[in-house]
Image (tube, rainbow, N blue to C red; front, side, top):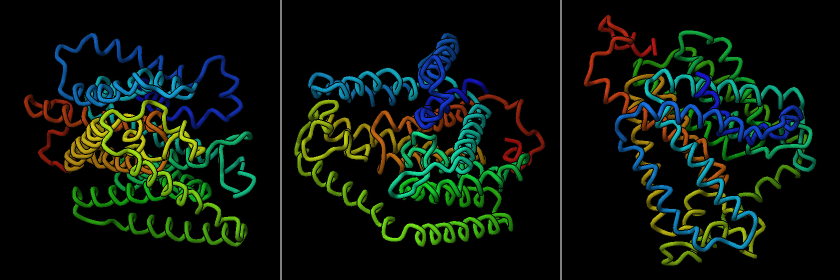
Length: 393
């Protein structure tokens, strides 16, 4: 449980950095959690007798981007980006393949997302820190990008909704957490995370319906309450901020301009323009185009982009396969869908470690399920009731 909690913390540690107690730590929170994960991976990897095919898929992703290291942009950002990509981000992608050997490990990872997200949401809402101009909710006195807060609490909404609807324990606590996280998500005014969380919640509902063959009264009640709360909150914020809230829309215009530039300038480049090259483009102040595929296309070329797309598709297919077996699989699929959507509208390749983590979780879950078919399951339900087995997971 500790290793999975540290893995999730590692993937989202940057969101906590503005907090005073985090800044007071003698070591960086990302490095601290990464060290714990690395020790766990080394200890577990020493017992692995064969290398699963999933390692090759993830390895190809990083191998495809390696040629871009030969022509990095001449900037500290490019050097730091390359270093983090082939150390911390590589660890985030590989760790779940090693650590997730059973469904219970994925359960702990999802629970960690819910707890971390609910904690961030509670701190944000209680502290009430806002950006100066658009009045968006942030974390900590010095502020954290509202979208970083929105991404984490959005994932927590998905996990907690699954627990509230289909869990066997902590349902009331989870329902309360959905409310807190939903409020924080709306107050960040981050459209990308809001869309990602909404689609993730739909996956939870549809996946749960496929397993239970019914929509429960709780589902209808929760969705209605969430929808009404979101409408009231957005209406209130619009009335309070007036014309200032319209400035949020400029982010979409800037993204469209960057994406058009990337598509026009990429041409037939097979190896891209080098790691960190987008940040050196004089047309933009952003370090990356806020779209993972376009970032990789511009900096590392067409081949790496196709490999990245293949990795995402394989991860989604594995998650979908698991969603047909258990609520844990449904929730993993929903979270992965949300992280993929977030990767298409925000963050750079190192900032999208949560997506790589849950791709690894999905791949490892599917491998575990296939292995369990080859041997009797002595840990699950033995009553012959598949629904009971799902509920017990």
